[in-house]
Image (cartoon, rainbow, N blue to C red):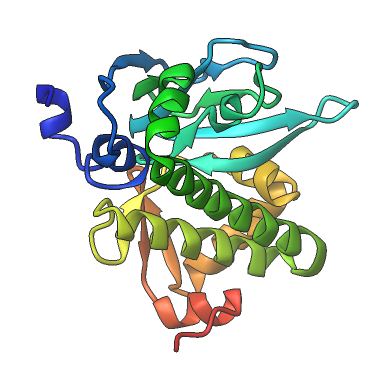
Length: 232
């Protein structure tokens, strides 16, 4: 196992764990790379044929509408996959752009297919990962169509906290939060001014606070009530 893998917190889960555990005689090869903030990890139409796992940094999948406005389709955090559509398509439809400086590991798609041909378990693992991504997109669609601005933002914060906590990247109720208000607005179908007002309301009501690139959830129950997320 390469030294970088031995120290990676994602080696045992997600795509990396599935590739490592696959029952195949084929060699597992991967490359490593970095992307600076505001640069593209993948461009629309690209045919690189690689699937990337983010090790450090945040990114977004996005598209533009005809009038030039941007819609963020998903927010990618450490441990997430970028370029998954290469498994089914020869080129990327939706670009992926780094929000922060980003490091990643990449697997060659053809090699993944060859490993999967020997161990279908890898295929099922990949389908599970894709299904989880689809669930996130469907949830965001409901937010855009049926929930108000406060609910949308509360749900985004709660979902990011859940994901980061599950990967050991949150410190209790505190988590990294490099999202600019414009990025949040592009993800939630709001204006930057509206996002600013809601964030100010959350801060004034001691629900959340953003300091030095970290978001602190001060009142989890209030946040979940607004988000209409009920604990079982």
